[in-house]
Image (cartoon, rainbow, N blue to C red; front, side):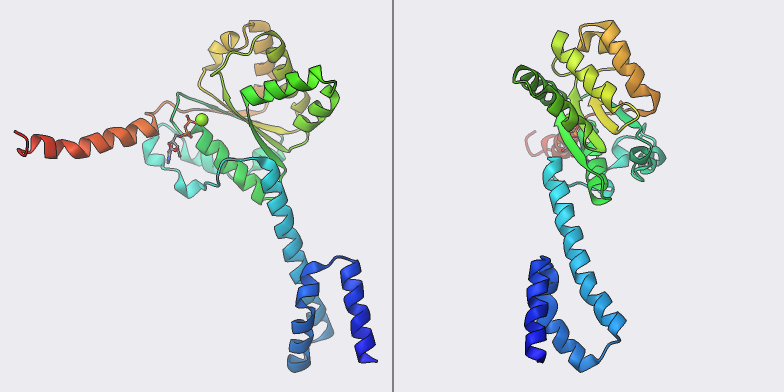
Length: 262
Ligand code: ADP
Ligand code: MG
């Protein structure tokens, strides 16, 4: 009798695809025979296995979808390298309230100052907090949108750009976005307006965006929507790469000037 019930239980667990419970069932029952937990406790612990496994699976799914650069965390960000950066502001962004508020973040600064790094840190935090995130570059965004327009998948692609609760658009400004590309970029920004967050990084100051989009009217329209609810961070410090480079050179200097070669 007990054997039949056990078989039925196993069949049900498989039918419901409770894979973590399926794995735990035999050892859990064995431990329960021994430890005699309450019914509530037994059931709660068994279900907790499944919930943990499902959450883990979803996290991995969101992570795969997001296409983010490798995981980086806030404690890996060296604030001493960017003294002009308001640390509290970054820590406030890291709470992800801006995602909840469907607000935007603009990271503006020259190459190498940590814009992609900050965007990556925020992106991973958001994935881990359960948000749908997608990382792309401005060039990739307009290329995909243009391709979709040609192939008759415009509506689908617009839905795609609208899907994530946080869209990270890296590297605006390295390539100029003329005509169609500027208009496509505008449409993505405009549809996400008050609907989902954008973290945008750019090497071009806002006053130069007329050049980026080859059109001051489009640039103004994009900025109007982006900046309405936005945190703008200008990072003006030295390039971190150059800094590391310079430090390496400086550390060699004593050896060079210290007499060995003189
Ligand atoms: P950007 O996107 O502004 O061009 P990156 O984010 O790619 O710059 O940073 C360039 C390199 O320097 C990366 O390897 C990054 O991890 C590192 N880096 C930049 N700023 C910092 C920082 N404040 N702390 C630690 N690493 C940094
Ligand atoms: Mg970058």
